[in-house]
Length: 144
Image 1 (cartoon, rainbow, N blue to C red):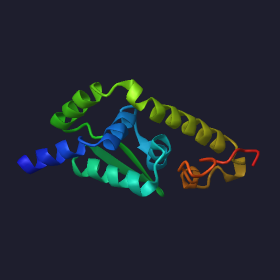
Image 2: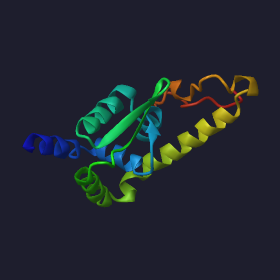
Image 3: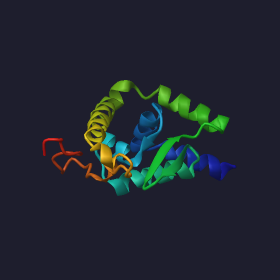
């Protein structure tokens, strides 16, 4: 029991993981969404997601090639702990993350709308575009 508690507290003791939890507070997100919001590369985001998952704070589900994450709500202790911690993370601290996420989701939505009707039945590949700030754009414009 002590080891389990230490794992949970260690998972909550890192800024990036708190930022991820704050994003997931708004609902389920794909790894690519989290990458765009945090402006981080996939291996780094996946590492932090793994720590949170190992601590039982989040759960995942696969949909095709993509993995979606959400806050684990079945354990009352963990849920209460997450709520208590996130209550103390001021919105200003994650304002840039939230803004980047919103902008990315808008571009992603726009990209999906521009797909030809004959291709709609094909799996979407909106998450396969590079997300890191070293790239000019996360998703190409329809005019590109």
